[in-house]
Length: 287
Image (cartoon, rainbow, N blue to C red):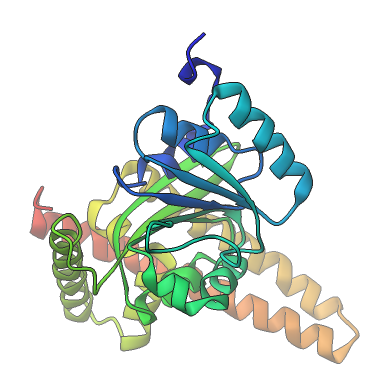
């Protein structure tokens, strides 16, 4: 059996993550679990080398076993590390970082813990499973352009996947993508302003729904918008009863605050849906 034949098949979600990893770069998979993504990237010739990092020894040992079974000990390096702490970055180390299968708040913490290392990365491939707006907002405020996005519906859930490039990177493979991303975002913001979006609504539309998803409008994203509208309406109704029944003043206030957040997000999703219908008609098939 070939080394590639010994690697485990990836789920649709993890295939989407691997699909946004640029070819030819050394990568670090933070929170690698059993090492399936590093194995896929190396066996398919996408990355010349991958650091498989995890904060837990148990999963890292399973990854080490899988790496040895596939015969990739010389191309995948297991690292016991909390985030990027012990992962080599730049100067022959990782050029791209992958963080998938964890919450958005944790991803932001990992990106923020070692700012010098994060700033030395050329690419970030991120799959936040909650609070994705925190991740997109962090990227936009810390010198990274969202150059591509994907979304997967798997096991009843929607999973966004983000590819971001460092805006100060001068490489020929990155600079055109950053420029194109900036033009797309500018065109989206112009369209939103023309339709009466406030500055806060424009920012929230980009961080909650993603500039590249808004631009490309894949069918799964349309389904996600509808799901957001319906889910938030249902949860808002449920919270109304819970708020009235709550006896603790602080608990009641937290419930009302959550209800307001859901209402605002639902209304924004409706406004974005209307905007995209007009925007698609204006832009046609142009990308």
